[in-house]
Amino acid sequence: MAETSPNPVTAPEQHRPTAPSTAPGPAPSEPLWRDALGEQLRSARRDRGETLSETADRAGISPQYLSEIERGVKEPSSEMIAAVAGALETTLGDLVLQVAERILLDRSAIDRAGTGNGPVCRAAYALAA
Amino acid sequence: MAETSPNPVTAPEQHRPTAPSTAPGPAPSEPLWRDALGEQLRSARRDRGETLSETADRAGISPQYLSEIERGVKEPSSEMIAAVAGALETTLGDLVLQVAERILLDRSAIDRAGTGNGPVCRAAYALAA
DNA sequence: CACCGGTTCCGCTGAAGGCGCAATCCGAGG
DNA sequence: CCTCGGATTGCGCCTTCAGCGGAACCGGTG
Image (cartoon, rainbow over all chains, first blue to last red):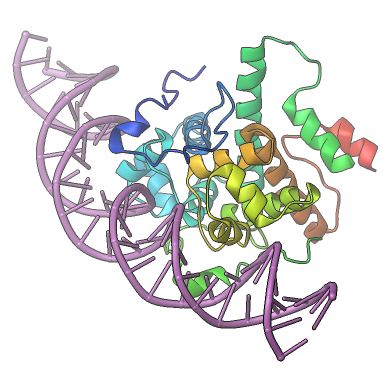
C-alpha cells in the first residue's frame, strides 16, 4: 500500500462540498474519484522516478498544485488530468483504467474474497463482449 | 452509439479552461474525462429507462444539472459523481471501469486495429478476435 | 390549437481551482 | 552536531466555474 495514500479525512478540512444530503453517496469503504486518481498519479510519477517539479513542468502546471492533486486536496479539471496523463506518458484511457483497478482492488482487499478474476481481466472481457 | 454523444466542441463555448499551453494534452481523438463520464452516465441512466428527473432526485441534484453533466458541459465534483453513481445503483469502481472501457473502445475503433497491448489481459483480447 | 413532460439554455452566487510565496521536511555532507 | 539544498506541504488570494433555479425549447398527444 502506498505510504502516502491520500486520506479522505484530510480533504474536508477545506470545506469540501459534501454529497447532497439525500444522495446514496459512495459505497462503504470506497474512495472518492479525486482520492483514487491522486493516488494513482503519485504512484505513476514515482514509478518513473520523478519529482513533482519534473512531472509538473512537462504538464505545464505548478508542482505545488500537482502535490495537491496527488494528495486529493484539489479536484483537477479534465484538461489538467489530460495534461498530467500526457506528462506521465500515458493516455486517459489507461489512466482511468488504472484508477478503476485501484478502486476495485481496494474493494476486493476489503471484501477479503480472493476471486480468480481481477478487475483487469474483467475490463478486457467487457471489451470482448 | 448513443445519439446524444456529447460533442467536445460544444463545451468550450463556455470558456472552458484549456490545458496548459506547454502540456502534451490529450492523445489525438481521445475524449476528456468529463465527456466520457457524461456519456457513460447518460447511457447508464437510459439503460434503466429513467428520466433526468428520476435519477437526479435520487442523487439529490437538479435535473438541469444532471443534464449538463451528461452533456459534458459541467465538471462534477467527486461527491456528485458518487451521488449519481449511487442513484444509478452502481459503484464508483464499476462506473470508472465502464468509463475506461468506453474510452479504450473508442480508441480501438479509431485505430481500426485490435492491438490490445495495454494493461489488460491478452487472453480476453484473443476471445474478442 | 393547447398542454404536458423531458430536456436544454442561461444568468447568478457562492465556492473552489490553480497559482505563488513561504514554511516545513528530509537526506546528504562537512 | 549544524548547514544546505531539493522536495514537498501549507496557506491565502484572485479568477473561474460548479450547482442552482427560472425560463425557453421541443416533441408527442389530444
